[in-house]
Length: 86
Image 1 (cartoon, rainbow, N blue to C red):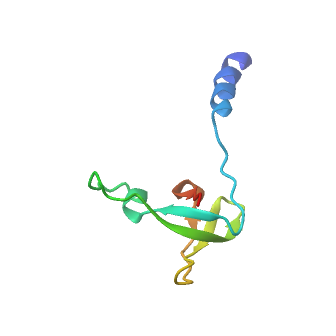
Image 2 (image 1 turned 30 degrees about the horizontal axis):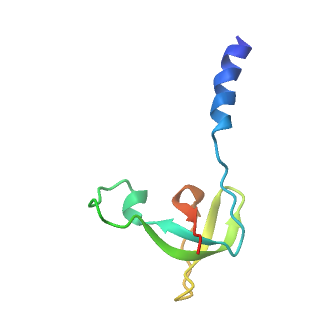
């Protein structure tokens, strides 16, 4: 029975990609409507940015800084952030 429960877990873990961010990385932030699961028009942008990560907390959230204005955002979960490649 243990083997029966272990095999699906291993299959799931095999495809999980951990998100690793470092302070100073450039990232894109999901817009508020996507985070709240509201409907958007088909052509509306779903990401804003780029932002710079200023703080990383161990419970998988970070604080972002807008490089143009120098303003900071509130804590944002890693699932709403993706790396920006310039």
